[in-house]
Image 1 (cartoon, rainbow, N blue to C red):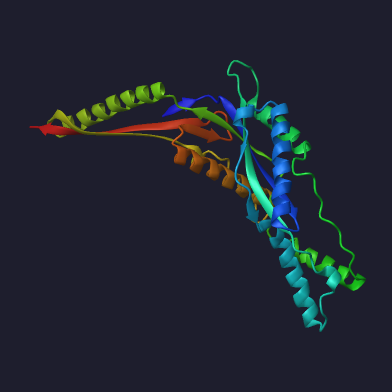
Image 2 (tube, rainbow, N blue to C red):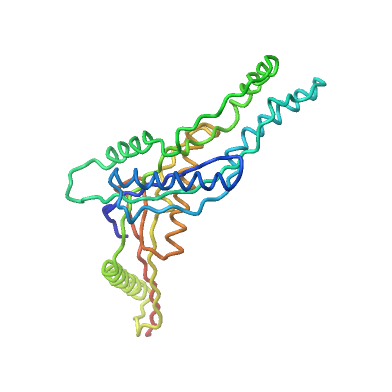
Length: 283
């Protein structure tokens, strides 16, 4: 096990834009991407580290609203009435992408990194990079408004949605080639020692080395703080959303074979280096 100190903090932020057609939504999110990159750079992010994924069409933003509409429609049909045109929502296209950026960390600075990360998160939230858009209110008949309020109370017990305007901030450490070589050498010595002890217990001796296999991996997948929040709560939804972002980052590291470890805890950045050795047995 190799423990490392963080060299950077990485921010993950989801940007979303909506419009009445896909072309307009893509244009809107491009403008948000450009603005966000400028803001993050001004807050101290390394400009070359700021990148964003390909915008993709998202149905999540409309799912809850459509469910709400379906519930009201069903209730009105049971009462022998049709849904008023004023309550029929216009077609909305939503696209989203994930923006990432790194902030360098000076190991010599005496800074509480968790406090620093919380302040950075607040600055990013205050920038309202998604525009602070509010859902437009609709004029509906009084009887329908009453029904909506009733249905809204029922929906309150449903699973909450995460706040995607809140960034995820994790700490990053890298394993250099030299550190990996040193770790492999130490792991081999340990494997050899264990093999010698086992051979001695069997009253035999080790011969020549027949096979050798070494692996090294990061422990990012288990380094996301998981608090036992109530299922369906806003805190639970937020935790699951952050976990999803973390898993995307881990998968990206695997695909690019980057030896990075990510953790929400700056004191839990670890790499595991293991060596398996096969020796000839001498009687």
